[in-house]
Each structure stands twice: as C-alpha cells, then as structure tokens.
Length: 273
Length: 285
Ligand SMILES: Nc1ncnc2c1ncn2[C@@H]1O[C@H](COP(=O)(O)OP(=O)(O)OP(=O)(O)O)[C@@H](O)[C@H]1O
Ligand SMILES: [Mg+2]
Image (cartoon, rainbow over all chains, first blue to last red; front, side, top):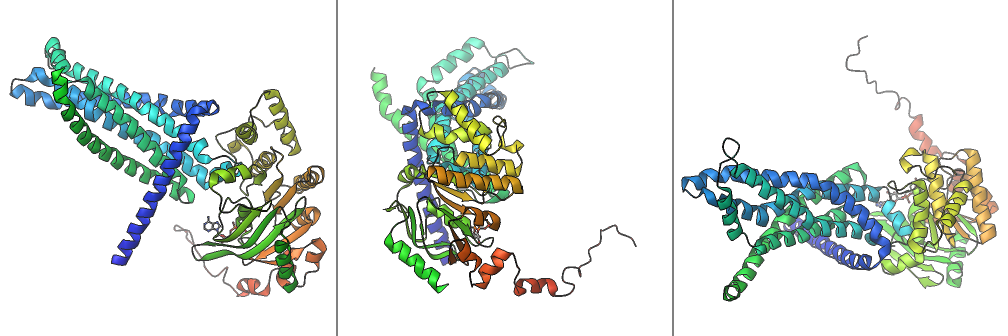
C-alpha cells in the first residue's frame, strides 16, 4: 500500500518535472518566436482561431454573470435600504473575480479542449514526429504560437467579459420595473465609480495573462504526452480541462493573496498622495 | 548466421559507414524490441531491412535519425555520436535526412502542396514562390500526383497519401533517405515506379537509402544489401544472392512466403475456426 502510494508520488513528481521542462522550453521558444517575423503568420492564425472566435461565448458568459448577480443581490441590499449600492457590488465582483475566472473557464473548455485534441491527434498519427523528422522543433512550431496567442488574447477576452458583465448588471438594475429594478442611474454609476478602482480592473486583466498561459501550456502538454488511440486523446482532453480548471482556481486564490498584500502595502502611500 | 554477426562487428569497428549503430538495445517496458544490434549503413548504398511484422523494423529506422532514443547503445552519424545530443542539435542533423513514415504522417491541416513546402519553408528563406511551385510540381509528378496540389490529405486514398509523404521526404534532396515501407499499399506498377525512383535518386544524387519493406521483389530490385531482423536481432546480412541462398530456415521461409508448420498447426486443429455457432438474437429455424 505504502509502496503503491510511494510509486504514485514518484511518478507524479516525474510528471511535474517533465511539465516544468516543457514549460521552460515553451518559454524559450516563445521568446525566439517573438523576434522571428517568420512565425508571425502562425501566431496570427492561432489568434484568429483562439481569440476571435471566442469573443461571442465569452461575452455571453460575462452578460449572464452580471445579470444574475444583480438579481441575486438586489433583495439583500434592498432589505437594508442600500439598493443604490448594487452597482458597486456587481461591478467589483465582475471585474475582479467572476469575469476573469468564468471567462478563463470558458476558454479552458473551448480553447484548451481543442488544443489538446488537435495536438493529441497529431501525436498519435505521428505528425509531431514528422515535424521532428524534418528538423523542426515541434514546441517552437506548434506550441509556442498557441501559447502566445492565448497569453495575448485572454486578457483582451476578459475585458470583453467585464464589459458585458457591467452592461448586463446595468440593464437588470437601472430600467424601470418590470424590466429592471428601477435604481437611480446616477447613484448606480457614482457608487460604482467610487468603489471600483483602476487597480481592480488591472488585477482582473493581469490574471487573464496568467490564466491564458496556464490553459495553453497545460493543454498543449497533455496533447503532446497523450496515449495512443482515440481513447488516449479523449482522456488527455478530460485531464487537460480538469487540470486547467484547478490551475485557474489556484492561481486566482494566489492572486487574491498577493494582490491584497500589494494593495495594503501601497494603500497608505496612495492616501498620502 | 555466425558469419553474419562477425561481419557486422568488423564493419562497426572499422567505423566506415555514414550511420553506425553500436550495440543498440531498445526496450518498451519489458518488451525487448531491439537486442544489441550493431549495424553500419554505407554511404551511397541502398540498404533494405526486411523482417516479419512487429519485429522492430520501424523502431530500428527511427533510431537512425534518433526519433527514438536507444535504451542502451550508441548511434553515430558521420562519425559523430548523436544519440545523446539535445533535441535542438538533433534537429540540425535531421535536416540531412528524409524520413517516410509508415503511415505517411502528413499534416492533415495543410494541403498537399503546403505539406511538401513545409521542410523548405522551415529551413530556407523563400525568395521566389514560382521556384517553389515548380519544385512542388516536379516532386508531385515524380510520384504521379501533379494536379493534386490543393487537395487535403483527408481527401486522398491511402496510397496517394503515401506518395505525397514520399514527395515530402525527398523535398530537400537529403543525403540520407529512410523509407518505412515505401511501396506498401500501392499497386504493382506504382510500386515499381517508386523502386525506380529510389534507384534513380541513389544513382544520380548518390543518396544513402535505407528502406524497410515486406516486398521481396522490391527488395531484390533496389538493395545493395539486405538485412533481416528477427526477434530483435539481425539474422542475415548481405546482398540479394546471399539472402536468396541463406541457410537459415527463417530467412528462407520469409523470402519465399512460406508458413512454418508450427504456425499452420493452429489452423489444422479441426473445427477451431468453425465450432462456435453464433446466431442472431431473433433467429428462428
Ligand atoms: N511507442 C511504442 N511503445 C511501446 N511499444 C512499441 C512502441 N513502438 C513499437 N513498439 C513495439 O515494438 C515492436 C516492433 O514494432 P515495429 O513498429 O518496429 O514493428 P515493424 O517491424 O515495423 O512491424 P510492421 O512490419 O508491422 O510495421 C512491437 O512489438 C511493438 O509492440
Ligand atoms: Mg513498421
């Protein structure tokens, strides 16, 4: 029993090591790709597939998050007579936490799944070996453009999600009943403006950078290491999604801790200015 | 058989040969696929590897350009040890090789023309696209597929895919070409054209060729030297006549396409194939 667990732990440690090596090589390849204009078309193509086509789903996600928050929070706040603060509650949740995380989860499903399936299929049909056999580094040719596209576009997609979340919240809160809750528009926005700082928006968007990188790196790694056959590809996709999801949540938690620390360090200075 | 293994050892220690495998062993888990194989591939010659299905021919050729790393043993290319090089240095060496995968391994998201351009685009700066187009046209007409430039691999037949893969493998005119079953799945006439192509490339460009095949006609036609693998070892090594007259019964059975009595025994046991009588669920007599 202990032996089995020990073996499993050793195996997992080996996997972590391999993944770290993969990420390291990917970072080098990304840096090289950035300076070689020859690879820009590849990155461009991936940006189109990964980014542009994800805009609608991410916007829908954002809008529903904002609308649902408004509906759930209104009664609580109205009970205390603070319904005019609905704006700040919705907007700060959307911009700081829910927008980035849910958009990233959406992307992990949409983009991560596709990346793993594509690279996994290429792996089992020896296409990755074919890239190697022609003297090209598959990490540079296949992985780096995808990772770069995810890195650059996830923050942009999160901005879309934020925007739609804010609008969704607004359209549930402000219009007169029965469409909305009839909150005074001026009060709604002025409380929001007072409560949401640029810092909050920035944290949300910077998170996107890391979420995007994590999703792409995990999905590509799972594709590269997938086992033979259709079953292997399917399993790799599932594992990639689960791992990306957990990684997003863990990164988000880490970000919460770190950004709080940074914020409280600099808050006194800011009030002096 | 004794003589063969001695001959191998002598060649390796001489160190001539553009690719040399030294005491190469490859295992997958407990499965020993190649067992202490030593082999020197001569420059400018055609070496054909034969052997029963599953004996490790593909694994052997994948070691020649270190697509697979040996479990133990060494691989040399032009007297330089390459099996322990990091992947990026290997990539530079692999540009000297062309590799035809058994399954073709075409990039299915790229068209036929893009597949053939791929190695060129990776390693050269293309100035005139018309030159590249001409090159694609020539390579495709060699394999009889001119006009298929804009097809996608999914829309080709198995044999056509194999031929596109062949065109891709020779796109850069590499020094060494490794063919994994170049003629399998082709009709006899097309197969013979491929044989002629291999001979032509070798004669005119002095290319070193290693071909894996089951097709003895093709092997006799193209080979300067034939190697037979069996149970992870080289059991025969020599020119076509040497193989034809080889005393080892496994070699004779293989080249003549005879089944051994042991293998036939399973068919002889009366009724094994026919005893089970499965009837459809709704079957009524
Ligand atoms: N990636 C791998 N992982 C595990 N085992 C493998 C792998 N590749 C090959 N093998 C094993 O190596 C053995 C030889 O395989 P190989 O593909 O070299 O056969 P082959 O001689 O090319 O056969 P064929 O003529 O049918 O193509 C097989 O028993 C196979 O199980
Ligand atoms: Mg094979």
